[in-house]
Image (cartoon, rainbow, N blue to C red; front, side, top):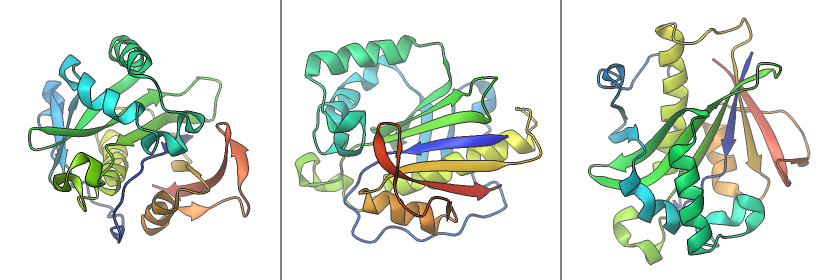
Length: 215
């Protein structure tokens, strides 16, 4: 049984954070058990709400943000708003969280349960607000994408520890990263993922590199 992480986040961190994955559960999930949120390394992950539309639209209408997603095409504001409404009302995701630094929403993570006929159990997506000057220096150097990636890994450990999902014998997280997304490739490698394909292959409509990590 595998867990699939689609990692398309983009940021401007000059030195991506180098952290080893711990076997311990780091996050605080006490509020999550009440159906609210969880915290991990200074960030809060809460359920996505209608008030998040502005940030969502900012992400999906920005050509830099969409460089490694949506076939590299930014959405119009109208299309982004329609996409947000579909997303917020979509019953398919197992969970959908806004990534928050204090009271500020900086991005989103989404967890989908895989098809019963597929070897993939979960699909994860990470979208983090661009940290460049266009959005203000307060976003710069915060490593939101890196911290969100480690939060997802920690969340899987929590599900496993609490027996909240039926895990198989082969516990593997799989990451697919656009071959030109150098920051994400660096972070995935430093997180402990092992590269599977030697050369980029066409996956999710883009030339990508596949990584896996046992957990």
